[in-house]
Amino acid sequence: MNIRMLKAIAILPGTALIFAPGLALWFGAGTAWAADFTPDNLQPILLALPFAVVGLIMMIWSVRMYKIHGGDGTPAPWDPIPNFVANGPYLYVRNPMLIGVILFQGAEAAYLQSWPVFIWMLIFIVANMIYFPLSEEPGLEKRFGETYLRYKENVPRWIPRFSAWKPPSN
Image 1 (tube, rainbow, N blue to C red):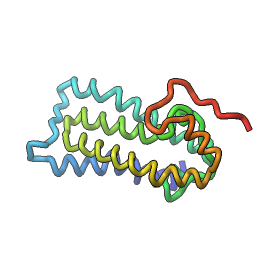
Image 2: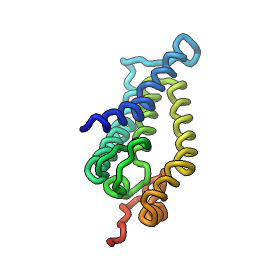
Image 3: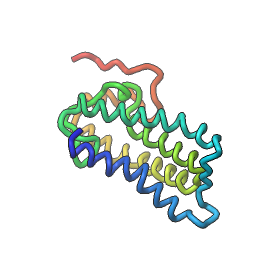
Image 4: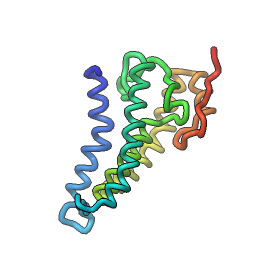
């Protein structure tokens, strides 16, 4: 993995999954909102584990598709890939990487039993529900034109399809 990809991963998922939840835990410490992390309690672990595993798989699979099919670039908006990617999880949902991050955030909130981390996840979801249709998608329409418009018509933004979309062969 190149330094640009590592930088994008450190900044984007790093902020969403480590830095912001860490701040939420720090600000909540010593208050009624403090995390109730008890390592000997298996319930939060059992609740969080499936979300963490599925979220991690989605993130890794998505980044792998970017690396294999995207060309030189990263998932970061400041260093985009030149090729349109409609492979792997992108055949089921338009934002699988983000869904993976959100699932992992939910796992963090459940495992740490932290309302501030859960609230951060909700803020993150709302921010992205605004950002994607207003900024990300218009940019993709400009970059990839009809290809992206056809994809957008067939693959949902947030809730995955039950079967993989089969793009028309050119």
